[in-house]
Image 1 (cartoon, rainbow, N blue to C red):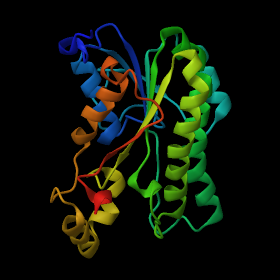
Image 2 (cartoon, rainbow, N blue to C red):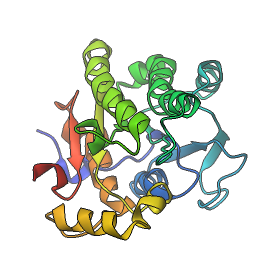
Image 3 (tube, rainbow, N blue to C red):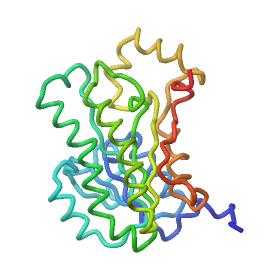
Image 4 (tube, helix red, strand yellow):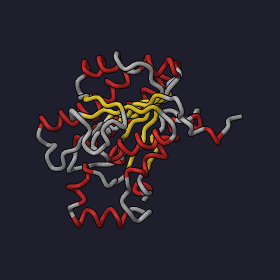
Length: 243
């Protein structure tokens, strides 16, 4: 019988949060694991974290779209218990440009693939877990961010495939699909008053989400409490996709 009181005790666990240098969901998740005792490392594309206290977490600059760079980083990282991939980008109204479309896909989808491959052996050794950030846009059209929507649908599908492939290695692979969250990435869409109100009107919870709303789902999916959960894509959208 599991001791559920200790299920979210990550003391001594090694957690890597990819894409946590600019605040937002990644930084909130890193903070959550740290509060639960984990040894947390983070990455971002910047030379130094921008909105995260420097020195609080071990930091590395990493472009996840560069497969060789990801492999080299993983080779030098050491042991790992939990990999959380929050790296992502969107360029509202600009993704019909072929180069931009390709860049968004490279970061959001190819980057996830690179990371899973690179840390496969480390996570197998620890019988660890992968948590990926997908999106509710994996479920319906996104005309202003077509590459973002396509990439996040790919993240959801790749999560299912990785869950099957990695299960014999003892690695669980799950995703979270956030709804509309107040982050730097959604600043442009929140500036559209009509869009902002439409989100409020459709969301049963009656508000936009905050980065901390994604922390609990991430902790759960990485914890022993979710030992029989793999290949799942957990909606954390205030009920938006239930409507």
